[in-house]
Every structure is written in C-alpha cells, then in structure tokens.
Image (cartoon, rainbow, N blue to C red; front, side):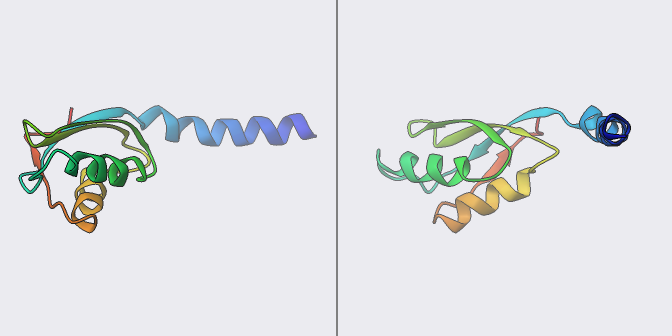
Length: 95
C-alpha cells in the first residue's frame, strides 16, 4: 500500500517539475552608489526562495540572478531589491 501511495505522489509531482526551469536574469540596479551596496543587494536576492546563484557588480550596477522559475519570478526579485532600498529593472528577457 505504501508503495502505491508513493507511486501516485511521484506521478503527480513529475509533471510539475517537468515544466520547471532554471532561468537567469540580469537586473539593472542604478541606485548602488558605493562599494558596500552590492552586499545588501546580494543578501536580499539570496533570501528569495528559489534563487540559486547571485552575482552583483558594483562597477556595472547590475545583479545577475539564476533562479528556479517554478519557485520565483522576476517580479519577486525586483521586489526584493526594492524592499532593500535598491529598485531594479530587468535588462532584456529572462533566459
């Protein structure tokens, strides 16, 4: 009986994970005005569920985020930076 329940659970979860994808987006964060700002931006983005990797460049004033699109989206990422005091906008389309 336990095997059947487990099988049904796996079968139901399989289609959901089949549509999930890892995406990468670059966010333009023009309000980073000092070399310490990227620390706050990085921390805010890492706290978003589904974020896998964050690279922040003060020189370019941008953050490149790799995330699981089944768990989060670009709107959640830009909200996280804005809530931390650093409004951001995506550059181009998420890949």
